[in-house]
Image (cartoon, rainbow, N blue to C red; front, top):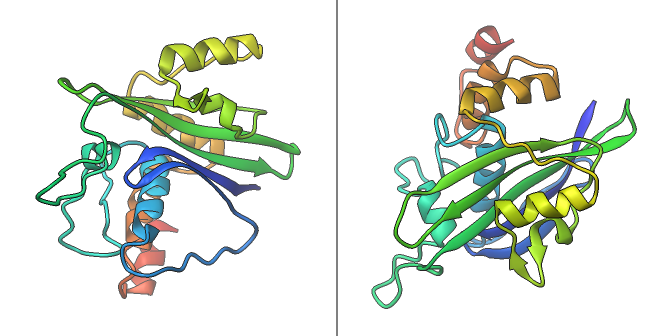
Amino acid sequence: MKKLTKIKLVNWHLFSNQTIEIKDNTLISGENGSGKSTLLDAVQYLLVGGRGGVKFNVAANDEAKRSLEGYVRGRLGSEEREFLRPNDVISHVALEFYDEDLDQFSIIGVILDYPKSGNLKERFYILNDLSIDDSLFLDKNYPRDFKTMRSHLTELGRELKPFNTQREYREALGRFFGMDARKYAQILPKALAFKPIDLQAFIFEFY
């Protein structure tokens, strides 16, 4: 059985560099706007396997207009300042899991490269037998891009090999968790909606 043990966010909405430790059952609480939905959306984004199928901010608002680009840029929406990070941005979102059977940690994550004038590029990866550490994602407090992160891992004797497609990543997630990844990608957004559901129908559809 795999247990979520850490969440790492670098340049994700209002989180510039945060590591959240998870121990057994964890309660996330806070005032409106404190980042609860932002945190859950990061988890959802990685576990669903990309932006396709993700419903950002449904935990807070059914008509939310948040986007992946907005999370990376740090969309503020104020008249004085629309984005927290308006220039070139490198973001990291990563989850650390502990496998009780193998007695080892693993990481699933994504490197997000968003140039000031250009398209957002996603690189998903899975690193086995490795735990989250700031040095993986930061070099002198500056977020590592794909090239520097790959070089750093090569020095550690590891290979950073991103998946070419969302389908490849989702299939790898399925193998990682030992589950039907397609069904799980459908379940997770529903579970994060924080609104009543027909429990009997939910179990019948996804069990």
